Image 1: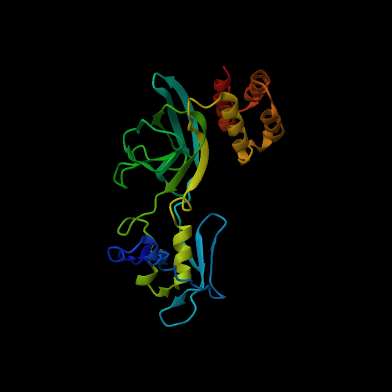
Image 2 (image 1 turned 135 degrees about the vertical axis):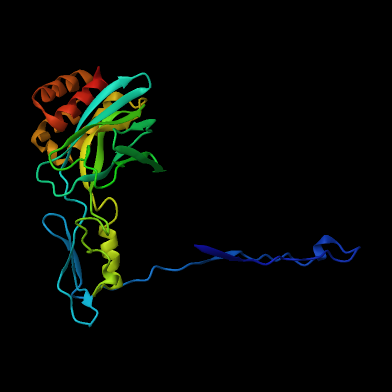
Length: 311
């Protein structure tokens, strides 16, 4: 945004020598008023026949595009990178510097794409990140504090299937280190889409080189839905979350409230509501222990992590 300020300088002189101060003309002032100049984003109207939606399995459907001859195009389906079935098992170890988070990642049976890249949204500092062979840590994005987004992806040519997370495959050796205590974090996964020239490539994205033309409204909607977070499959896991200085009971209540918003925990909803209302650590510890004794998967990992706050 560009700002322009208009002001004037008031110049005045003293009266001739010998004149008393009361004879001097009163000083005049001018108010400085800023004028803010800028440009507004152009408003683009949606045509009545234009629509962007998702199929039941997550592909993009574009309606209202036109062909180069001016006639209306049939609905265009764009394959997205969401045809993976990720699940994560977390193991948390206490270290001298804080905590080590180990992840075992599986791409479930029936996945139509292999996992090419994923990212962990830690809400505290990540001091180190490691990946197994044929994978690597691409980047730790710290531009949106306090979240630190750790990107981990394949480090092999697409024709190499060694340690590839295809359907039904489990891989381990993904590790984060952090001084932050464990809590629920989101891990997002993207499937592989063949590039031009690779086997299985489908030219379903570059409309402008084909026979289909899209309006500016359709183009913006396609871009919005195809942004990084929208074009991925998120799951919850245990990861770096709570600063070590945070009061234990406050941290546990905060995590329980988040769990109440996650479908995997709906089976424990009544127990979680009771835990949030607990006023002392002993009661909370006993009730958490009872939950942990019969929970598996993410629920079991989560309750065990919270019990660590109450030791």
